[in-house]
Length: 250
Image (cartoon, rainbow, N blue to C red; front, side, top):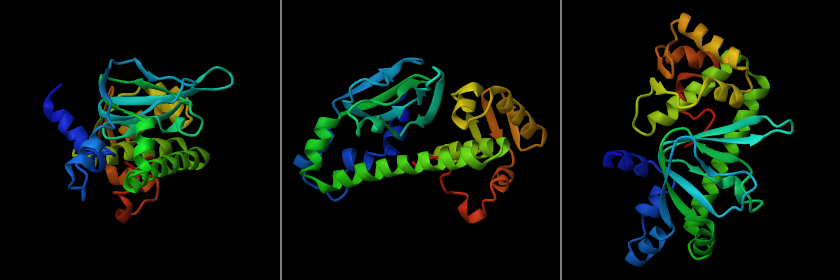
């Protein structure tokens, strides 16, 4: 993995300003203690599980590189995809309330994560209110993301759901310095359907229809957004809102 990839991921991490380059905290002792929250760096192979539903909650994970999906098992034994997470984002927050992870996190490609034991975080938040504020903001963003997903599933047609999904990925990639229009979908069409509440056939037909309309150019998992304004128009989003997050706030 090139060093530059780690630099890009770390510079956009939710914890970067507080843990790695803590603004306004000149004390070398304080900086060292913040850095000590990261217990280790862990490599994950594609398809491997970072944590499983029901296992004891021990740590939060900041994704350095790679892409993950989270999923839960429904009452009838089916997998329900609950989220997709990329470099710079934190996963594992679902375990805070019950001391157990409520979902499973699986790597969709080779990944590296920073392991931050929650016991260390809790101990330091009592001494550093700024750290608690950072954690509160990250948890608030996750609540907003889940709320937006529920609104989407409740009232959007298939094309609108796909448009919202692509705009969300586009925004998250753009704020990390990557192309807004060229996306590589690490997840399968079936996983997209599970997340958006659509059948696999509906997802495939919708991508094909958007390609026929000249809005997208689709080559397997490579998606080029040719007309991003058309995607915004599907959601009735004005130009002033085009840089806002749709499903996820990074």
